[in-house]
Amino acid sequence: MTASPQSARPFTVLVTGGAGYIGSHAVLALLDTGWRVAVLDNLATGFRWAVPKGAAFYEGDIADAALVTRIVAEQDVGAIMHFAGSVVVPESMTNPLKYYDNNSARSRALIDTAVHAGVRHFIFSSTAATYGIPESVPVREDAPQRPINPYGMSKLMTEAMLGDVAAAHDFNYCALRYFNVAGADPKARSGQSTAGATHLIKVAVEAALGRRSHVDVFGTDFATPDGTGVRDYIHVSDLAAAHLLALDALIAQPDVSHKLNCGYGRGFSVLEVLDAVDRATNRRIERRLGDRRPGDPDALIADNGAIRAAFGWQPRYADLDTIVAHALAWERALVERRLAA
Image 1 (cartoon, helix red, strand yellow):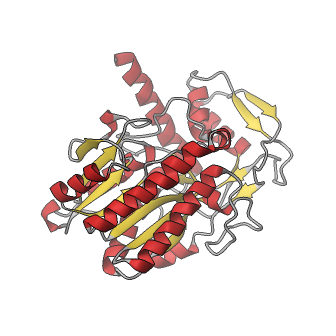
Image 2 (cartoon, helix red, strand yellow; image 1 turned 135 degrees about the vertical axis):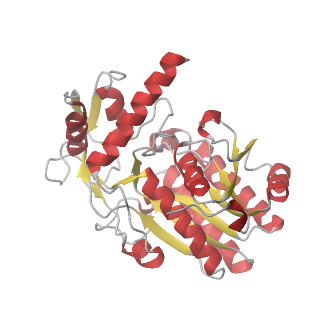
């Protein structure tokens, strides 16, 4: 796709958490297609270097109403892509109030500011964790939402707020429920960079490059072909593309909102992922088999029929080996960055 001139776009998109993993990929996708972009990030887990030069950058908090109002006015913001928040499920169990603050209370403040500043379109980074342990897979959007951890509940609360706000104001939204996000920008411009990340593919490529001694496998007694948990891994660039399609849809139909899954509709087990990393590096990662964690479902796979039908979404990188190759290339780039520092 050829990027349109920035002057052809009707407004600027504010990306909260745009210095983080998924947010930085959304910023790249927006800039690549001619959108004007402003980034708001407190850099708690993000990186200033992850924000491209083409985006205006503001360091601060999404709950700072005066700052957000100023950004909207200065940058002519007409839509918000909201990625800022906390995402580590085990941490949410031990520190739930952090998650209800960062993911629910601060989102409420951001939505309130957006409404009062006249921002009409809002795209929210939600999660498959809102479903809890699904009754059946693949999981459809109309499946019961029964989160089993504060992370999932904090995101579900924000979905509920958005629905109520859209019913009361000149405002529409899209909540995209991510499954397991992985990989990195194919041009190696961004990727998962957070130290101590818990994403399996990130952990596995770190182990493959000698930055971890092994990979823990939590559970070998799941009701799956090889006994390890099965998850739907979606390439982060395909996810970013879904956000752009959501933005176009919100603009085209300002009275319509959406709640949609983001996944490929097929899953891979933990051992299949580790085998893919082994293939990519021609070495074997040490696996340490352990007990399953409470609440882990056997399989979590998206039914993605709705987003394909609504937006015409066509993933470009729906291949495990491709996802692993891009993640590995980014991890090698990070090693070089650290050596050069």
